[in-house]
Length: 548
View 1 (cartoon, rainbow, N blue to C red):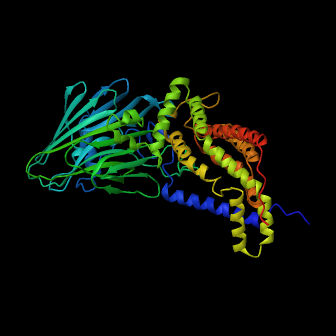
View 2: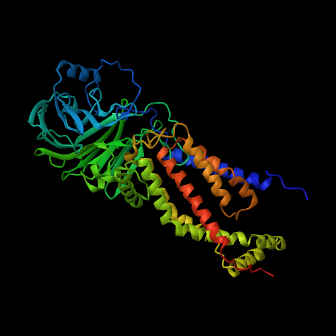
View 3: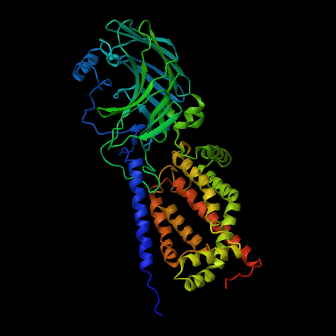
């Protein structure tokens, strides 16, 4: 009998099916996570291409229904000298401008960008944070284009006042020291002015035009900076990326809080008043806006709006200073209820080892040890399946023309030998929530941002620059594959030989902290496999019960 070719018909079918699954998964991810903003983060925000010269002032035009032109607004602002009020502590520095009564600068002093410069969430050249506009009525809606009077109340508080067509706006901004929080109390006194809505806004440069190359098979945008909105509204939450293909201007009624930020930093608006606004994502003039749109329920008196703005890192403990629910801004996915305890455990291990790379290794070993009972059950089931393979092959030859009888005899064979066909997969499926939650923790935790490991790995949130870890991971997967009992069809087994190389290629663009976790997990899996193999050699194996 001639030996079968490696690329027989069944093998080719399996290869084609794998390719279809791969391309189908990529198409699904493109729809769910379209290509986000292209360039690297510069000064904490997504850098966008612009034709503006360095000497140009920003254009303030967040309200689409304004009657005045951008040129008129620019001229009016340029005629008045800009005055600012500043606050600074060890955590951050902010500036408030009389031009538009906005927060014109936010600098995070404890964090740096990829180039080593302090993170600047907003600069004076941008529209800014906490701009205020009105909609409806006969007055000029561009409160954000007015020149405000600045009055310092204390070292941590400032009052801004402006008038427009019979309406007076008073904004009191209070900084919470070292908490990345600004409290905003806005009062608009415009009796019978007729406007229907008050809008408070924050903005960031919108994505550039070039598509990002940092995506991975598992997660679009993996290993790179992104720009995303998050809304907590009613009893639901929504998250969507800012993309180059779709402006995604959306409105969410009854918004309790909302944010606009990158993977590791965010600006969050948390409503503190009795009137619950509608949250909106808006895109115009090279900027992404997050708007809180407050309806005017009573035209007879002054309108009071109260909210808190958080502008800082996505550190859970910092976000929870605003509210426990604010931690939802960090994207830990469907299994966040597992991810949060894993993150706390990793932070505890960091306190012990003072190195997040070592903490990841220790955490991985702990997780593998805790899930070992499931692994052992799966191994025993696969070993039992391997034992009955010759008898299964014989039954297939005998009953090759009668599928119904073959299935009956196969089930009887498994029952007689106490083999559970799902025993190999079910224990592994039970482990998936833990492994996926840990994946999300390592992918999105700011704790790994700029955290060094050893030698050539200076930032666990970035990919391995020399691809050493992906190569080692692929090698360890090959070893593990050789040790694993083989119960697959020969054609499938041949295809699986290429999977370690495939996964090593996919991991090249992922953060090195995540690759380190998978590599260590695989190595520990190999150790467990060797232990279980030794256990098999020393134990008496029950005789195979054959079907007659």
